Amino acid sequence: MAKPRKRYVCQACGSVTAQWAGQCGDCGDWNTLVEEAGANVTPFQAKHNLQSGGRAIQLTGLNTDIALPERMATGIAELDRALGGGFVEGSATLIGGDPGIGKSTLLLQAAAKVANRGLRVVYVSGEEAGDQVRLRARRLGLGQAPVMFAAATSVRDILTTMGEGAAPALLVIDSIQTMHSDLIEGAPGTVSQVRASAGELIRFAKERGTAVVLVGHVTKDGNIAGPRVLEHMVDTVLAFEGERSHQYRILRAVKNRFGGTDEIGVFAMESEGLSEVANPSSLFLTQRDESVTGTVVFPALEGTRPVLVEVQALVVRLASGATPRRAVVGWDSSRLSMILAVLEARCGLSFSTCEVYLNIAGGYRVQDPAADLAVAAALVSALSERPLAADAVAFGEIALSGEVRPVAHGALRCREAGKLGFAKALAPAAQADKGGLALTGFKNLGAFVDHLLGR
Image: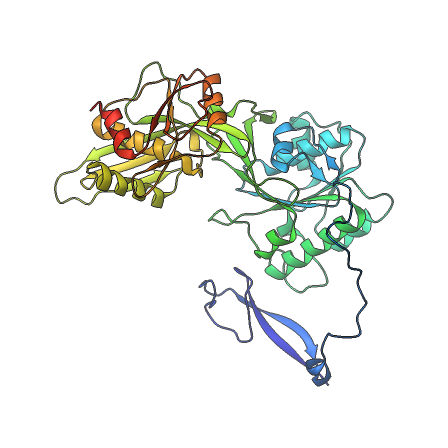
């Protein structure tokens, strides 16, 4: 008789070991290994190979003509922008975000818009009761939307119900961590349950042509909870970002098999739900009548959308012997250390006895390398207490040699700045297209600092 083989799965990272241990050897977390019953292994199965006995699959060339996947627009322009044009039939989308950020609100609004066009939409909640969701829909003005709703956590029950009659065009599962498959032992939310439940729902989406949207919880680090393989299984991963204390929200495409991964959608949380922000640059700029030291406007680029944000810097001189502090909000701290080192080595500016604080206004997170020149300008302005012109923007990448390198889509950045009333641009000298602004180019960081200090 075959002897069952035991294995232990880490609930944090999903690694599998043959023996239990107090600490996971891969991620280092304690008390996360849970026993799972493995398949029975016989001597015949151990020796048997997989080179025969299977079903021959059909192989086709890459040059086979296929039709482009059809898009199902949601009617919410910012959501469609992040998705690349809307949901794709038979696709699986995973959306994650902090609690209370507005994931359920956004999906309820999208489901209502799709249902109002005559398509069948099913919304399944594993966290809230039916009356709670109906009250939210009524508060959002969606109480009359023809969305079919159910409160369930069993994947078998959900798929059995979906198999009766025509498959829905859109199926929302809120959330995948609450789903339970009776084929796997364990409580909902464990690695094996999340993986098995998501696999069954994704297979249903591929077989029936339904666009499935899975809501995912996030950890304290901001990563989607559960196994990392969940993000590999789905077609699209959307991250809903923003501070609960701020009004706006940013929907960012982290992975998209049917579109770009740099697009963002911007929303504002209001009493009637999430509203679209057509001009997101106005959210991240401080309204001021005069120039302020340590502030520079940077035209960031998210996919094809330019967004103007304000870079704020504060430099505080300390007494001798004190350890200076470096604090960054909304930017890479290691990138700030590099800019400070280049300013000291190539430009002769000393920040070793100063505390440096850097902030991107409005809680926006900048990942564009073109922000180097704007950060350097803010630091120099704060150190010298000389403000930059209020109608100027700055962008460019800084090399370790002090060279100011050109960046992509400079004309698009300048045109967006011109729409909001800016007239000057501090940019790399190799930036050809001015985009309608009076461009001042710099080949190296030393010339840029001399310009700011009026040397």
